[in-house]
Every structure is written in structure tokens, then in C-alpha cells.
Length: 80
Image (cartoon, rainbow, N blue to C red):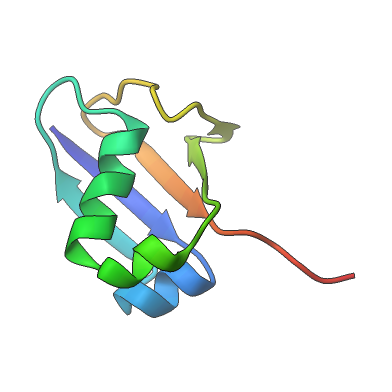
């Protein structure tokens, strides 16, 4: 299956792009995407907290993905 991954802030800096397309095995989850990112881009391992949204809804990391899903990887936000 193929999924699109949108990256913001530190994620975009680490990858060098705002979007990636990943090909994953059937049964992959949101956690699988994070694992792939951490493997391909080791600096992702330094980001302690990442939120994941599938479509427009925040998702649990165990949420199973489907072909064509769009994920957003959202890093911690700070500021005032």
C-alpha cells in the first residue's frame, strides 16, 4: 500500500521535505510509519513526542492504515 506523509517543523527539517510517499506492507499502522521514519532518518529518534493524524483526525499509533491514507506527523509545539 502507498501512504502520503506530511511533515511539519522539525520533521520537515530532518527529512528535507514537507511530504513523503511511503510504500508499506498490508497491516501497517501509524507506528509503522514512525518506525520507518526513525530508521531512514535517525535524527527522528531524538524527537520525544510526535502526534499522528490520519486525514483530519488524530490517531492512535496502533491505527491500521489503508492504501491512499494521508498522515500528518505533528511534532511538539511550544510558544505562547
